[in-house]
Length: 437
Ligand code: MEV
Image (cartoon, rainbow, N blue to C red; front, side, top):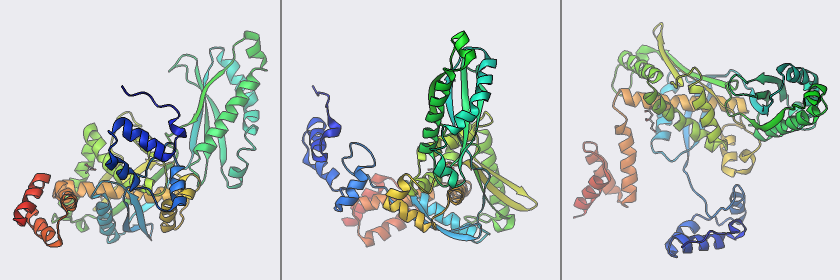
């Protein structure tokens, strides 16, 4: 029986691989080669990547691609995207081109405040904790003056602290809700450091507070952590043009625009459709988030929570026809950064940000919102006209052909044939087999 390993993290990369391959893979040398073929010959670069996380044994490649021709507020962007799903980048590029000819994307940042909470147990008198908080608030604020010095110089820092009595939802539950401006940094470390310091100050000052001492009832900090729900860090993107200019895939503008609007209305009322609709939006958003070294999990969590802010999970986009114009928009929370974290470390992230002209966090929010809107447009355009499979199958066919090591001539013949036949792995393999006979 397999024994647990101890000291795995202390083993060298080769030792880790040897242990894994002998324990789980019957000493298969091919497995070792698979891992090692992805090692980078540039030792410095490899060391950099090894250092991002613990227990690294290889690198996991994802394609880094470009969707050009995004006209956003009058400026042209070539957007870097990192994603494994075929057709996402092609869809973004096609949509960028479509709207390039129709006025491009209009975007704006609505708000940029981030937040975190210090979660507290307190079973005493509400008046006592409210009085204590009012008296202590200035001390809590000054307790982080050293931590926020640099952030303040850049115009950011702690904005406010409020005490919230949440005992209606959970007995004895209070929280300090802290709001922050972090400018071009995503700010997770900054916010968490501030919160932990404020929490420490809160606990130490509470020990000296007469009301608490008298009743021997003190507030107790449960935990301090930023929130990935950032509905006060909002960005909006929109495209619009006269309905008659909206033809797509052979469908006239009026029919296309009204079917499109109907598709969004369905995503607004039907949760099953809304989730898939929003997943398509995230295809674009996550790809840019990854390419720019941001945290896609926090963005995903925050955006999906925002999609259900009114109690029902619904579409993140809105579409309407107004005075003969088709208007399509998205509004999403995005807490991202263009300095700090991976942005300074990862050479490809650095390249991606340079390509975007070293944007501020606010500018990047707008680019990401445009990419999300574009992706949704591309999906709905296919869905309400030709169906999604036509485009997908083209990419699927390319992947299968690639896998089968076909020649240029065979590719041309296969593409021609599968224009009119269903693509499956076996149908393509059979077709190539027949060709080669
Ligand atoms: C596939 O990755 C995304 C779509 O399903 C999105 C949608 O249905 O709107 C095509």
